[in-house]
Amino acid sequence: MISGQKTQESILIKAMYSASKTGFEALSIGKLASAVGMSKSGLFAHFNSKEQLQVDLLKAIAKKFVEVVITPSLKASRGEPRIRAMLKYLLAWADAKFMPGGCLFLTAIVEFDDKPGPARDFLVSNQKLWLNFISEAASLAIVEDHFQKDLDIELFTFEFHSIYQSYHYASRLLNDPLAESRAWIMLDKLLERSRG
Image 1 (cartoon, rainbow, N blue to C red):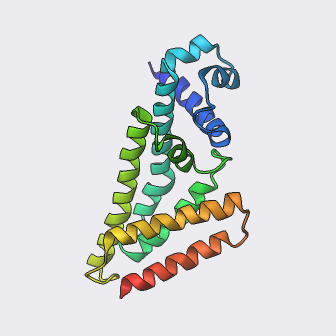
Image 2 (cartoon, rainbow, N blue to C red):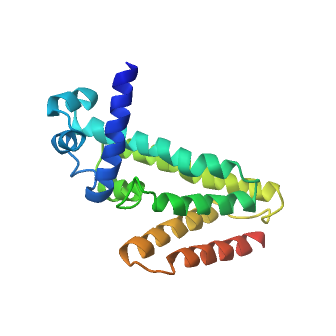
Image 3 (cartoon, rainbow, N blue to C red):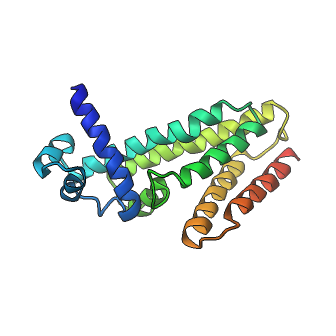
């Protein structure tokens, strides 16, 4: 069982790399089997369907996101320091070597936003957890007296998340050398408004 689990983890690491370049829909069991040096039937035994492969891949990406963004962010002090840490690790996530084609969540959102099914369901659930994490960080900044008491937390969350999306677009599509500095400027302005 452990060997099978390790094999599946290895397959999913390769799938992350491939999907970041080609997308989820282009990732097939046959192509992935060739990429990892397995037979199609051998790889099929791990996932049983392309849909299951997509769901398991999204779960693996979510686990990696926790490792790269959530866990290190939680080591920062509550309030503004944690929010700054979140952006720092989020920008690192966007440029992670295991995703040479960019953020797999953004890729998945484009591919699954209008496609009902288990992959979309998992993605929606996972993204709500992320947005809740941002909201909780903002709430703690209020508790720490870093932010004004009547801060619109939902709007803060929306704007913080928009910084990442803007960075990804400017950095990856437009190759804007100022993308990162602009992301930090956007955060500084958001924090300034949030203080009141």
